[in-house]
Image (tube, rainbow, N blue to C red; front, side, top):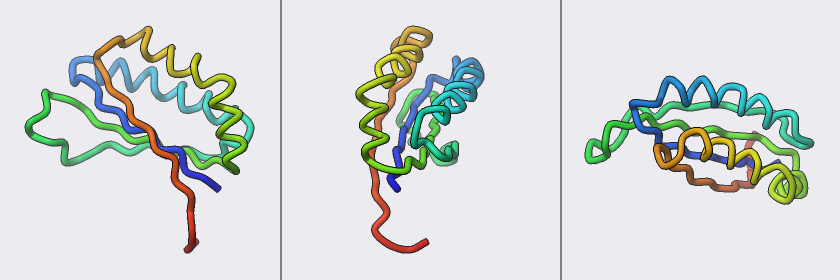
Length: 104
């Protein structure tokens, strides 16, 4: 199991529209092989120095690194491009890949 984490900083002025886009985007991600579950988080303590922004994190549970790599090699460019086309430079995204090494 790997955790694919996407962190989003969205200009407050487009947050509602972005959220309306993000909901079906996450649902589509769950149609890709190996993507088993997603959770969305909103940051409650955004940095004060930042321009008015809304911060989200999406955690995708993926069954294996091979499935995640298949996503990167296939639909990832299209999925990322859709957000860039719609919202241009009004959001930032960073990503991490984590693997569970113990616990439940």
